[in-house]
Amino acid sequence: MAVIDPAEEIKELSSKLAGVEVVLDLDAMRREAVGLREAASNPSLWEDQENAQAVTRRLAYLEAEISRVEGLRRRLDDTQVMFELADSENDEPTRAEGMRDLGALHSEINQLEVRTLLSGEYDSREALITINAQAGGADAADFAQNLMRMYLRWAERHGYPTEIYDTSYAEEAGIKSTTFAVKVPYAYGWLRGEHGTHRMVRISKYDNQGRRQTSFAGVDVVPVVQTADHIEINEDEIRVDVYRSSGPGGQGVNTTDSAVRITHLPTGIVVSCQNERSQLQNRATAMSVLQAKLLERKRLEEAQTLAGLRGETTSSWGTQIRNYVLYPYQNVKDVRTGVETGNTVAVLDGAIDEFVEAEIRYLRRAESARS
Image (cartoon, rainbow, N blue to C red):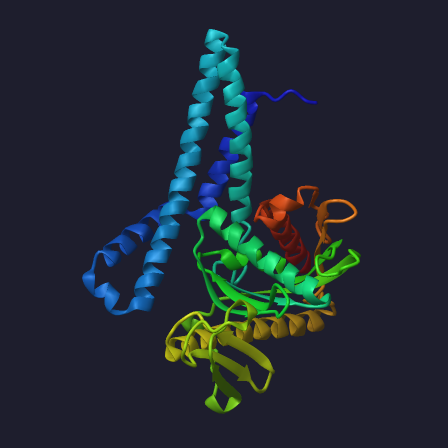
């Protein structure tokens, strides 16, 4: 194993962090944060609740990003001083502490560097995630619920707010489907590589003979729409159904028919929302989810048309993304990037950063090769 030269490592990390600061344009982020603080201090901002929430979310995101970069720079400087002190005093415990700090900084700065790769048209958007149980019966429904928890725990680990719009529970266990939002800038850029089919192999909890079962779940990731997207939906193109919200086992959640299901007749896309008590609010949220799905459909059609003009083929959404094997051995492996780990418990508890970062690099290389 090569011996790490702390001075060279710090110099390399400092250069990498400087490159990140240029790409992120830290000065522009600071100016935007100042403007948003002024807007947030205006009492009239809350006359428009939706806009006020967007302003405060954006401000919180910018402050966290600025603090993160500035904190890494301070820690890098402090670590350099620690090594200088250890060398001058011949202090091995201090040197060992510096090596631990250097390892952590290496990991965090590399992760921040990945963030600079998120330069796609919609990468800066918040994300809408829909998970559907596919083949595998009760095991597939249970797996879909495991994936839902995995993404919500991933968001929680990073301090990202989420909002669950709709969950359809299966009769025996787990869920048929769910739709939720990760409400932070760049959530779509981070998670778009998760889009596709996920596969689990394990001993079935629902087979009285304890046989091995393979089950599948589909993950759909789309960017949240913005005003400038101009996704128009005519009233005669949709069917709206209202029903009573329900929880696990079909139990009633609300006593009124406040949940809303919207079917887009030309495409067959169906979206639902039951998280609000007001039918009007649920309809508005369901319409925004439908707009997001139509925007993604339009984007994919345009990409396929452009690829056709270039004589290229595009990979199909719905291809297998990742295998989760719990029996006869423990392993989670990404089909495209080859990233894998035997710590299946941690992955299903939201520790998916290594997979997410590898997917971002993979997609960026694929896009660069096509351009």
